[in-house]
Length: 217
Ligand SMILES: Nc1ncnc2c1ncn2[C@@H]1O[C@H](COP(=O)(O)OP(=O)(O)OP(=O)(O)O)[C@@H](O)[C@H]1O
Ligand SMILES: [Mg+2]
Image (cartoon, rainbow, N blue to C red; front, side):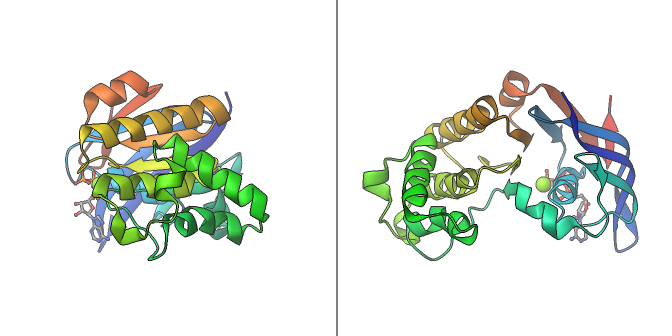
């Protein structure tokens, strides 16, 4: 397997305070990586670095063999993140899931097929849900629509930052299954932050444990 990410001597600080310090961190393409650790140990900070939403104060990030240096905006198209809060556009389910495909210039037939496939992947019946508005969904359904919207664009990397923290068992299970299937079917690299140790142990190829901004071995 080839290296997709390599972080070397990466330090992140907020207001002059170091919150993350990683000597070396490597993620292989097509793997499922679990991140665990206490509140405030730096997991979400690392996820924002991996999503190219932030730049570290020092150290280097290599992505797909190239040093990330000013090209984060371009790389952001390959990486998508789902957090605890389901962010949906104030539009129908269909428009939420089709939005990324429209931006990428996909044709109408492709969009319709992909929206259906993505909704099915997260356990939502397209006929029942496609035309619902964003406010006509439960929390678990909204989070699954948010995941479907991300899967629809077939990202190279799926970052899941506690995506099931406030969901019931059924929605949690469906999100878990969709994440693993994405890796198995299309080789997506999946990085998961979760306090659910059973899930992480079950699905991850590698688990990194964090404590106070450092990785424990
Ligand atoms: N934007 C920010 N400005 C200042 N401090 C921040 C910012 N974001 C995070 N921090 C601090 O950085 C540290 C690491 O936070 P981070 O969110 O990465 O932890 P976490 O491991 O994701 O925690 P949790 O399990 O609670 O989600 C914490 O001390 C937090 O207060
Ligand atoms: Mg966090």
